Length: 141
Image (cartoon, rainbow, N blue to C red; front, side, top):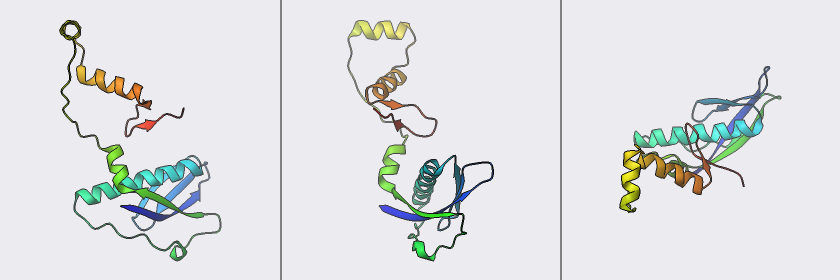
């Protein structure tokens, strides 16, 4: 399901922006406008996934013209594809059966190699995905 929620970006004295998602009562922040919007999208995605997992109703976004803001604030929309967000951040494990030469298996076991971790690292490298503590972000070419 795709949504476009209104957000309000408020400049903060120390620099950056505080972000409010009025429809969902979510708050986050970012160092600049781009990061603030990215953080809002991420917060909305996490919130929607949690609410769906709890089998709660996801509210429809308000009309942006109904949202009030101060003169120094930026009022804009943030889009989110909740299904795509869930797929990208799904950390469930999946069992894979694979084959490799016996000699390689023996050497790897003797060396104490973690096969799952090694395969994950190799796949991330092959797919040009960098590690991030909360999500996988594709590196720019």
